[in-house]
Image 1: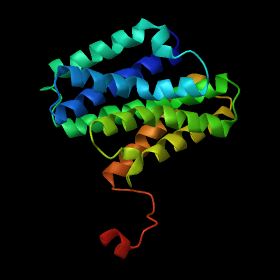
Image 2: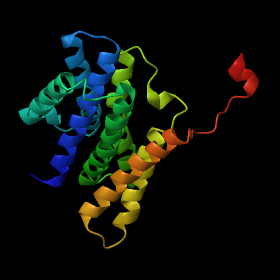
Image 3: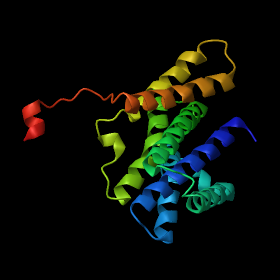
Amino acid sequence: MNISLLIDILGMVAFAISGVLTAMQKRMDVFGIFIIAFVTAVGGGTLRDLLLNTDIVWMQNMTYLYVIFFSAVFAVVFRKKLNYLRRSLFLFDTVGIALYTIVGVEKGIAFGLHPIICVALGTMSACFGGVTRDILCNEIPIIFRKEIYATACILGGLVYFLLSNFSMDSNWIVVISGAVVFAVRLLAVRFHLSLPSVYSKDELNS
């Protein structure tokens, strides 16, 4: 198994579990839980492949569907072990965006796209599944809140291209870039960091 496929599968696992946790917070039935897990796991990758006008990965390889299904079952069965659901949701969602950012960037590179487009593709791959999940669960998507979310993906993508200019092993580039996404998102939540607001206090209070 090559590292790109491994990262893709791990990303699906993380997003599927985050989808299950969100659906369980909303007290959905079994069908709803699996639907949310599915769209969270494949949403970003589907958008990515549609934009690239290439085969949609999960429709060509049943392994992805099996991974999503068993990840969802795991999350449901061991839901009591996943203490503090909100914290668990944050963890798996953060792992998911870190992994999918790298997958999207590398897909863009494989298609010979400009680095800026590759970073944008990685960001959309990472964020769109979560956006779909939140919309279906009647939540304002995280990407549209003040929290640093997409920004972490952008920084990770930029680090990927920065490190590519050095004679560094590609696996290390992947690991470090993904770690940057994870660390930035983690620090932003831990220290309540957010992007500057364009609204004044009066506008926010009105």
